[in-house]
Image (cartoon, rainbow, N blue to C red; front, side):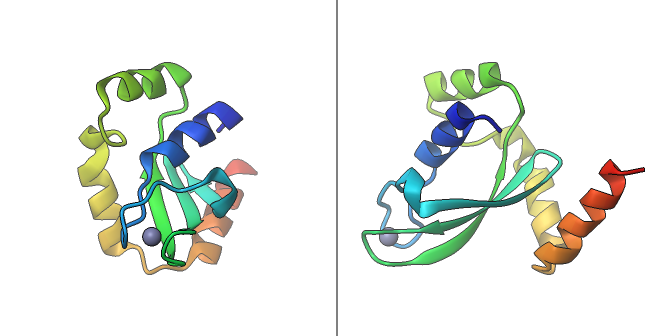
Length: 105
Ligand SMILES: [Zn+2]
């Protein structure tokens, strides 16, 4: 993810508690699993911390299209995300360790 994509992604996220937009400085990238990015976010408005999983296609063009239409993140992949989260046990360490092993054959 390049800085422009990161800024775009942050701009798409609202605090789930109070609905305020988040500041990039309050969003920490935890890691990536394919097109799925995991973020640790902190809302300066209500002091709520949360984990966010977001589907991001690795092309700026897609990001711009979504921006233009003001659509949420890749809604066509919402089901994939749902299925992933249904089986995901919250163990990021194992998740990213698996990915590291795949990237280093
Ligand atoms: Zn908030």
